[in-house]
Amino acid sequence: MYRLKPVMNQDVVCELPTCMYTLKPVCAYSHDPKAFSADSATGLAAAAPVDPMSIEIDNLLQKAENDELRMLAERQQRVLQQLAELKKEIMAMRTELKLNANTPPAVQPSTPLKSKAQLKAEPINLTCLQDFVVNASPEYVPYSLLALKNLWKDRLNLQVECFTHSTVPKLSEEALAFQNAVTVSGTAAANLPRIKVTLIWKNVGAYTEMITSPTSYVPICGEVNILRYLSRCGPSEFNYEQRDNVDEVDSILDACYLLLNKQNVKQRQQILRTLGAKLGKAAGFGGADLSLCDIAFTSAVKQVQRTVAKDVNPNMHKCMGRVAALAGL
Image 1 (cartoon, one colour):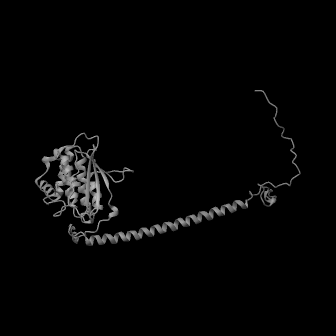
Image 2 (cartoon, rainbow, N blue to C red):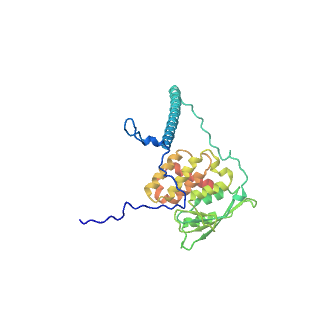
Image 3 (cartoon, helix red, strand yellow):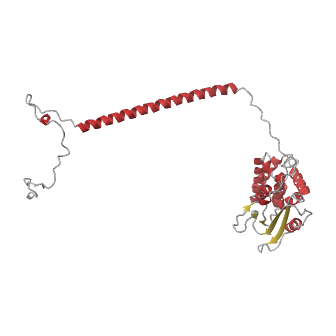
């Protein structure tokens, strides 16, 4: 290939300006210049100079490493000590469990359930009473409203007024009979607290709706949930939450809700068998007293009896007959 001339001559001298002070090179070491000179006696070059800054950095790194190792050793010692204490506690618990293995557990006395007569009948809080609207289908009549109206006649006046939505062309005979019974004005005292219920027959299926605030329209879905709401704001002796078996009552109410809203016949039969097992041979879910579970169960079975009539055992029929006699269904 062809040759090129040098781009820059290496012999060019660069003149530095003298208007500012000069600074020594930062790489210059503060050492003895003789250290770089050759040994006159041996003729060998002296050893490489030692940088004081490098020595200082090495010392700092060594100190930091020693401190970190010391802290790590102390932490490890604390962990080992905690493990030893934990092992000692576990061994003590193991010995105690072995000693108590042959001791029969103490039998906890079961808390008796409070009856309706034992519950204190407190005055009804008028601030909790609020008129509401119920949307119900004529195919799923909410019999619990009629039951509570009759049971609470001496404590709370439950006034029900019925209307028919345009989506319902004609009411069934069952719905008409219920409407005539629930709208009848009883002999309630004039000084009793009052709740006005507006019942609208509407095609909502099994999901009976309760609306307490028409402006916000936040419905409470399900007849058993309406019962829960009314039991809290109604007479205290009918409030199941004051009893000791709240969890059991809630599970029964949930089963009644599923019995209504499960469209599969096999699922309804399974739920009905579960409720029958909970009822057993007792007169009702609440024992001798008429409970909220009895009302919810009777209302749910009456609404779906077309599909599960053959699965209702004699004791269930007896329980429903008692509810019908006491609650006027």
